[in-house]
Image (cartoon, rainbow, N blue to C red; front, side, top):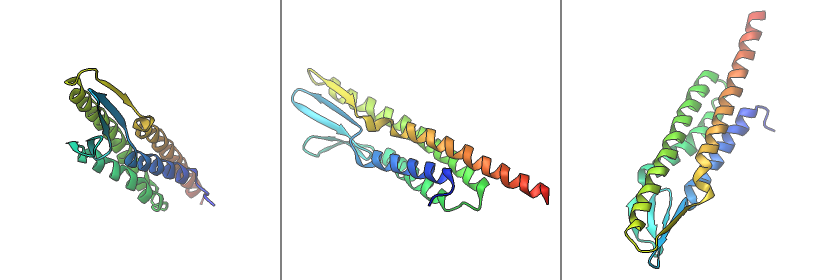
Length: 154
């Protein structure tokens, strides 16, 4: 049984970022061709890689592993807070990188006639993960204040 709510928040962040890693983030089409943006590449329908998005993939992998590691550092609350802040920076960076690669994908299909593009719902999952990372920081800080208040009584 999970006794600390921040553990649940951190596991939710891990799950959201992991889903982002393995699903299609956006689609682009035009002139009978279709392209998809994934965490590691912008690919055509036949699997040919047009742009490498390896930096986005690395950011997402780090953002998926860090909250999982943070869960097991429950005795070091201040370190947990710092790692959650790093997680939030990684999530903001991955959201910005998704925007950059979405823009690059739009530029690829802009050259084609009758171009169309759209985002999948999974592209916003890092932003939702950012909310849960912030909630976990608040819960960890609340625990730290509680521990400090009990130390004063002794």
